[in-house]
Image (cartoon, rainbow, N blue to C red):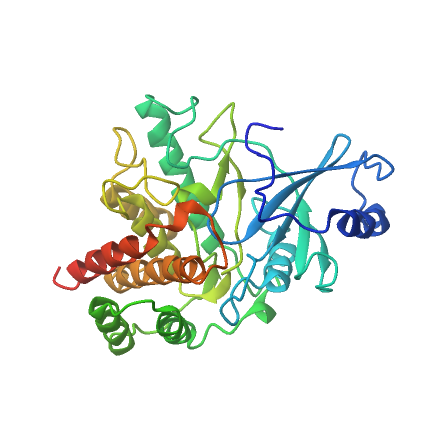
Length: 356
């Protein structure tokens, strides 16, 4: 077992013999140096994350990552592994922090769903507690914060036409579609009435900003615990993960998400990977993040408040969808028992921004 993996949770096992046979047949064509599929397959699980399931698969020294949707019914268009794989394959050559995708399986008969295989990268991930390489080191925290803002600005600086990525999405009407889609997800996954969320959905639909003059790649979930840092130099990013929500559109979607996760997004008594460490001394303040991004990207930030509200609304819906699965017995992960309270917390926080 590695430092960042654990035994597979008992409710999240796959058909390992079938997966092993599928991988043995197809991996040799991927040109992975040192791969020997005659060796026995070993499997563990990456315990982080609250939605998609990510497994660590090893053939001897060769390490791979297998990613599939959660068990049980999922929202339409959510957890689209084929889409995420296509995005990884397209973005990796122009933004190497996106890991290389190896294989896509669209036959749900292998592990019960569509899944894909990508390269394994090594480093540290900051979740609900800082790793030793960062803990109690304000200077390192400051450098990590600067590096992640710069990486976000660099992603948005990719010329989508020159890179041949325009086929990946339709930037026109992107934000409107996002607001409509997340509002619909909210109504489908509600387990109790929450007037603040309904009011936020209405406000977002009425306050849509104009389209950006230069649409960009939008990661869609750019936050600290979706980044991997070099253990020897934490201010150097090793990878950006979770491209499931990637699109072409307004880059301020990503800045809004980053800011939403940068300050507490759960009641004080709840701490896990969805809470934050970035209020500790040395981490950049939200104002400093915004200032650095503005300087690095040159973007017009006049509509940023809209995207901060939208980010909080979107996170609340994501958490509500997970809570919906928990309430309906589709997962028994104990981390999700308090997610209903967290949705209400986020709704109140987003509402408070409307009066700023």
